[in-house]
Length: 166
Image 1 (spheres, rainbow, N blue to C red):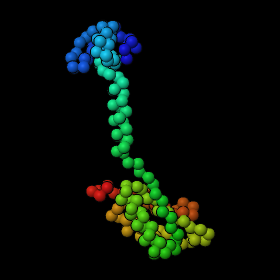
Image 2 (spheres, rainbow, N blue to C red):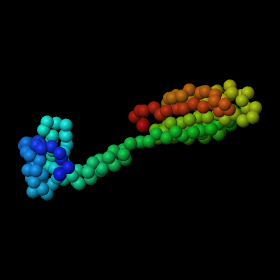
Image 3 (cartoon, helix red, strand yellow):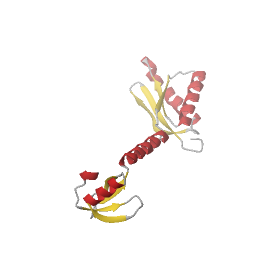
Image 4 (cartoon, one colour):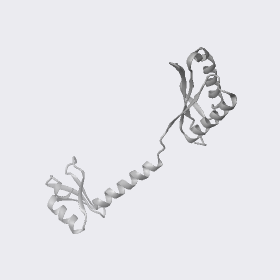
């Protein structure tokens, strides 16, 4: 920018979109006469391309655009639901409704069946519970990671389905 430009001759893009090839000192003088800065935009071109602009305003606009883009992005969160092999129907329905809400919001859901003590002998009930949950939530989510047993926990991950409601 300005005195930091090393080239001897540059192609200058003026604020009114006119192009001219000028020595650097003349280009800087021209920029200062307009109360603007000479900013190098393409240093590898032959000759290097510089633009006369308000550098402070340019940085402000750039930051503003980045902030706006950040507002629009949605961070996907992994929500976890924990069950036991003998989870009651009412508790199951309550947790299923929560999972449905999480999937509608666009979050992933990790459903985990926790086996304690000798509950591990009921791993088939845990698998049935996760399959039932998957069947009940098939309109809202799809399997990202199928149910698998890891130690004393069986878990699966559901991802939201992108559709008109999402």
